[in-house]
Image 1 (cartoon, rainbow, N blue to C red):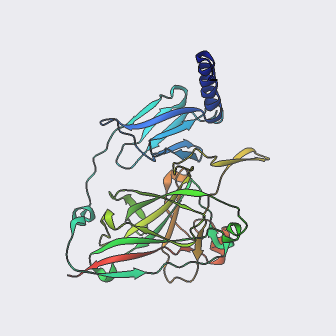
Image 2: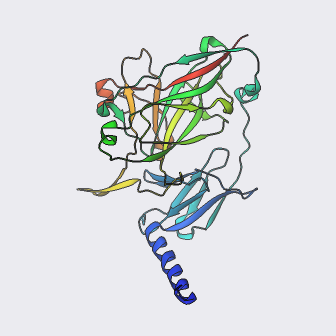
Image 3: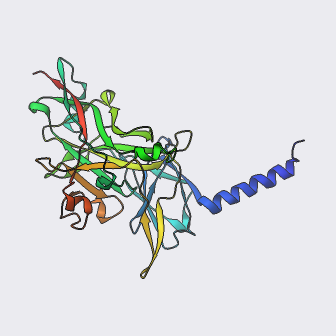
Length: 325
């Protein structure tokens, strides 16, 4: 026998109130002109905190949990950043498209002709104590240059990962994590302006291990004369349907200075290696220090165990289409 209509209504209202209490206000981010969702936009809370919108441009925020946050800063590639007050948070935030000048690499993306496949091998290991712990506040970028100074297109990215196989053998540790790949121009040996290539969002789970092969051949990503940086950033865990979930991205730790919010690390881990002749890896904390990129050495953090052990590079590799002149 079905429930009476008034009972269904009360249950619906109760479920809504529970949802608001647990996850806060639900907000949608859209394009101000087309009203289409802006997927995976960055939401900065200030004080080193932040999150990401899902693939439908939605996110949740609760004033109760972040009572000291008065402003959210919303940003996404191709849009002007927007500040929104939390005490008057709307249900819909409209981002204004920002027209930017296309770089020469985008113009040349239709190149055709004969090419040879070349490969820069990924370098990895299985030492979990020599791995970078991905968090939502961090982004890791690796430098790539043209192959033999010829027109070079990236066909595949080879991403070393450590899925902690020992947990899999015990039937534990199932997960699915959503990552984002972005591309930056070289600016004085540091990642600079974000290139106009489409961001690549993908998921990997506990069955992946050692090297994840990401096919980007259809994205027409050409390396400019000065090289480019390929960055890897975790967005969060995925649910059973492969959608980004509003998982807890910070742990609250009681200290002598009060409660501190510590970024939660996500799996899989990223193996960092030693022994490369050149420093190729750069990092930034996107909710700290004005999103400033830094080379991953002692100038970044002299107390880092990875740096002290000499594990200063992420061994990302790639397969290229190298075009004949």
